[in-house]
Image: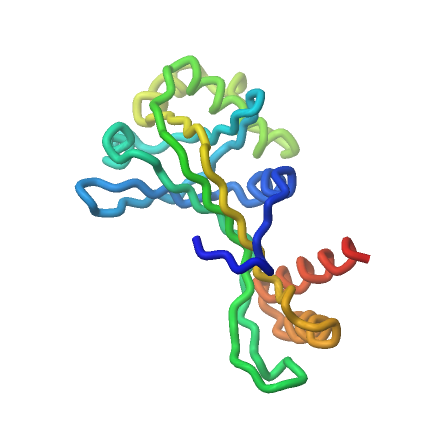
Length: 207
């Protein structure tokens, strides 16, 4: 991913927090030179100095069969994004697009059954624990779980390279930056308002 210096993020904790909040990812592998992609939620894990992503996909999805032969896989995470009109600047310029994106690269391997059970248990805990009637691993019948387990393949990816870009108008002066936030809020769309909030939070952190 091409990242100009204004937008490059290297803080590991910040990147990990971003992934926890934006965990629905795009997983890309190749088969005989042709890219294959699957969209799915992933879990981030730290083991000592190592970083892993784990997840699962349908057994009928042919992508998991490419893990052994494709070399490194690419995982892409995306946050809020929004169109930025250059009419919002105090000087002539061209429009652009603000966004957050994280790319991770690493080797993917298949999880053993016990590892998959552990991962699914944590996945349910993450997304269900605060619900009124949480659906957790121990609340589901063994018969249902056994049937569903036959239809999925679990995997883990040991990460060896991370790239992160937050393009949030950091290269604009204070006046333009504030005006962009105001205009994004006026747009009234979920993406524009999320971007405005993100830019405002960044500004507060730097004060």
